[in-house]
Length: 281
Ligand SMILES: C[S@@+](CC[C@H](N)C(=O)[O-])C[C@H]1O[C@@H](n2cnc3c(N)ncnc32)[C@H](O)[C@@H]1O
Image (cartoon, rainbow, N blue to C red; front, side, top):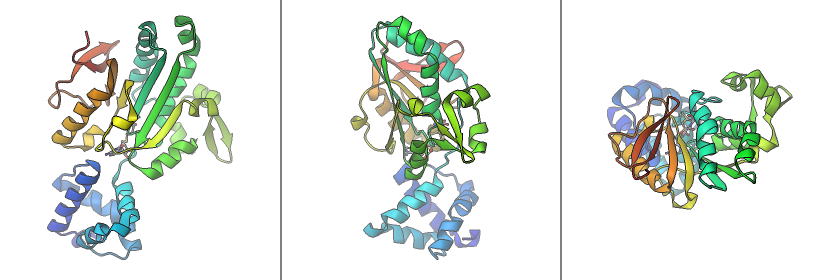
């Protein structure tokens, strides 16, 4: 699909569709993004305008097409140990403090987990600190990570835990590669003990969180940036309800809840900004 097939009306209706389905909010300047992401799919479907695509997706039999459009419009950019310091604060301070305050079973949510690097990096730091946590507590605390994303395709990849050279190079040091992966047929496969701690589930952040349960720590990183102020506010207010009274919310380095909700207050852990329930004292 060339840009000339994207009428103003087509682009505007496509933006409304995408926002209603995913929360992703596109600015007027994103014509090229839509064009480049949809090009292949439009050619395969032999469609020449966004209006025709939108019409076709309205049919109840066209759920696969709708999902395929959503898949190409999501940005799955991620890396291992993204920004480093949040996971350091998590492993050195947050988990020990939860254990010391008597939590036997700790639940972590990686919301919008992409291909699994965030959840698996979390599982790796837990593994690395196992002895330290065991010393803090009579028993090994049970730590479970629930990782969710909208995209079925990316979750399939996450569940497999197999990464190519480019993906492995993004943020993983040699030691961790050696400790937690096996090289097989040109790819690196994550060890079962790191995978076992993570449960992947398909979930849209626009839908209810009540089936997910309560969490001690929520990582919601580098996804709110794609949403409008109204959607950010809705998601953050609902996330506040899923966080335990002494829990922690960890956002991406360019994201903040201020201006969108008064349910959180900021706390700094060795320079890392985290958010706690506003009523926590
Ligand atoms: C840029 S990645 C961030 C991955 C990871 N959190 C990180 O910081 O590296 C954004 C992810 O958000 C997911 N996403 C976008 N809209 C979503 C929604 N409404 N519900 C759930 N996931 C969504 C995308 O599929 C994508 O995998």
